[in-house]
Amino acid sequence: MLSSRARAWLTRLESGIAIACLALISLFPIAEVVARRFRTGVPGSTDYIYHLVLWITFVGGMITSREDKHLSLSVGLELMQEPFRSWIQAFTSCLSTAVCASLAWSSFYFIRVGIDASRSVGALPRQAVLMIMPVGFAVMCLRFVLRAPRGWVFKIIAASGIGIAALLGYPLFDYTHLFVWPLSILLAASAAVGTPIFVVLGGLAALLFLNTGGTIAVIPNEAYTMLTGPIIPTIPLFTLAGFILSESKAGERLVRLFRALFGWLPGGLAIMTILICTFFTALTGASGVTILALGGLLSFVLIQNKYEKDFATGLLTVNGIGSLFPPSLPIIMYGVVAQINIKKMFVAVLIPCAIMVLGLVVLAVYTASRKKIQRIPFDAGEAGRSLKESFWEILIPAIILVSYFGGITTLVETGAVTVLYVTIVEVLIHRDMKAPEFANAFLKSIPIMGGVLVILAVAKGLSYFIVDAEIPMKLAEWLQAYISSKYVFLILLNIALLIIGCLMDVFSAIIVVVPLLIPLAHVYGINPIHLGIIFLANLEIGFLTPPVGINLFLASYRFNMPLVRVYRDVIPFFLTMIATLILITYVPVFSTFLVEIFFP
Image (tube, rainbow, N blue to C red):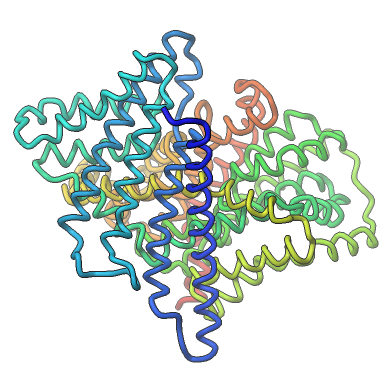
């Protein structure tokens, strides 16, 4: 076991590398924008940015393992009592260790065989740069052993995963095919008791490749291709910008502004909550971050102004509509996977999302009128003061839209400009953050990036297998044979996507499910842009669908309420969202109208 001093040194090293990678990812695009003004460029900057993303993925994954923050569905584990709980945790640690050990070895093999030793990343040997992949998986493997429940028996069970991985991958072991399907079922079922999502997806991909006689080196190969893609750097950039905002007092300033502007309307404070959450989530890209960052403040404001606690809890739990507004990362990822112009997706979501916001506003106004909630008198002076105070934050969407849609910057450069802008606003103008708080925003964002990007990396391998096995085409043929109606298909699609939204995070769902849906949509004559709106709206609603929507767990944690109480509180908002979803699904013009105008 490592001494406490050695662990502290490793923690500082990992955190320092991650912060340095994030800083460089932010600075290189800014340097490109500046250099372009002088008709020049930064040599090798694109290659550096792509491979810095690779590093932040695996260093972030190591940190996420260290802090035990990998995305998982642990509702089943939370219902268990000791000692059964510890045995199950040891079992999931064993699976996680086996998968990470397999991916570590296959990554090393991919680098040794698949990467030309003469190639470089700028001035650095490419093989050396890519070694972060096997190192990252190996460190995660070790940490899954160390984080197993206390006791040598549990540690040995966790460590046995390394032996299982070695046995299944051994070339002379002729019985691998006998274990593939039982292990696949076991791995999929283990997701319900806390096995990290990336382990489940990566393990399933590895088993499926082994079953067909393929090599699991395809997984790191596809992961490398995915992570060094042209759009992926936007994920860490916009995530970092969102965390800088959430760690500052930007949320308080925006609450004051929206309260002053809308508090005098019927249901004004509820409308304020909807708009501020939509605005904030669009910038952070994660509704869960908004619940944790602003939930306490907004709940206090609503309850102080005579809104019932169940209404406040339900409203704040359903706050994630903003993740469908530009520059939301799910929109970007869908565009990448479905190969749709990102600008078209940004334009297409505006009307459907406005409809969803309007649905919640109508419910808020109705509730306030029925409960006779007192309005706040409009104060022009307060509105002016709050607008002046939050002026710089209000400009953020305009800066993003003008710089990107105006052709001034690429999407990655827009993300970097956003990071630079919010840094200047929060650190230099408002002075909300000193160096420790600013560094803390970086550190808090890293587990989110690491968790999401590692999922994307391994899910790409599973997606490759699904497409290579022609599963989408076979599924399309089967559906054509039994379902002839487009409208019946849309009903079944919505039901399936709601379930997927409960069980999977949005990024892995996009990578795994979208390649299946695109051919099906073509069969039934559904516009892929319209399909994207339906897909993203369903997943967001899935996050608040009882019993296992992720936002329900976050709300229970943030508001210190039993899950059953949160289930009850969210029902009217859930039904409202379902009503708007039906409208969006069956009236495709809402999704295509603006696209046809701006992109004739």
